[in-house]
Image (cartoon, rainbow, N blue to C red; front, side, top):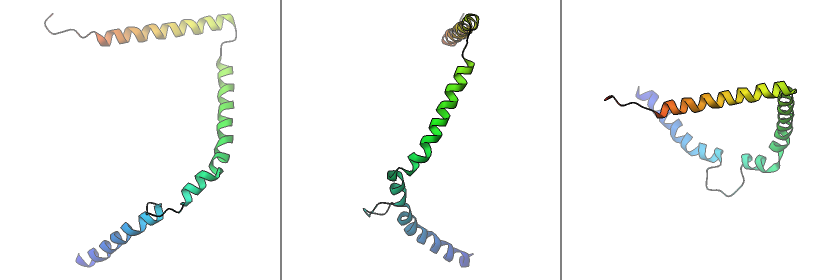
Length: 102
């Protein structure tokens, strides 16, 4: 058991010194790789088209789901009112807590 303990302790102590140096937590003022990539705009260049595609897909989905006729709009409004009514009734039911004495 003690034969295994020495190498394990040596690796842990070595890791305590190496990990901060690799992660940029060391007390140097030089920029790290992560901060250099973040400031270079490379991430924004990759993420921006993805955001734009997602936004376009969302707009298309919403336009397809939107009610087009007056009847569809009225049904959607009725559904919305029904959900709001059920939510307010549920909230009123939760706030009313009868006592055991009645």
